[in-house]
Length: 136
Image (cartoon, rainbow, N blue to C red; front, side):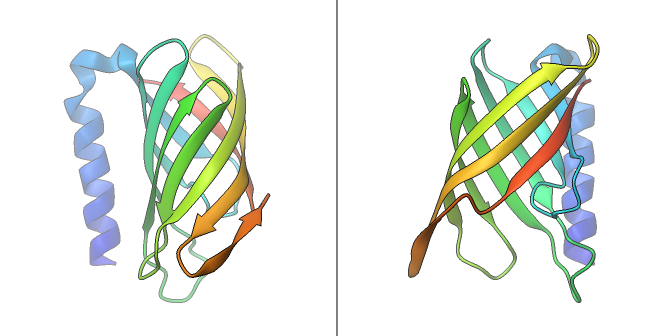
């Protein structure tokens, strides 16, 4: 519980501290209950490149702890590193597409195409997530 609160406080401080660069940053929030990508922050590097960072948390699990994920996209394809607490990181090849609901809110869907983890057989199409992208 303490680690989760600390992570959420760090994310909140980061959001507050980037106010002067608000056009380059956006908030992400999951629309699904998969626990895969609960929420995070997006840095818009260019018209075709974004970097996302966030936490994942699944309250349905007993003694759940927050995990993390970070990804980089160029166009529709990207790479992601994610890890649940006390587990090795997973490296994923990703596909995502997004559209606008309004000038300040977008919607997207992301799909893991391939997951690779040390000491585990590679897996394909393991999860997906629908999410909102909200301008700060």
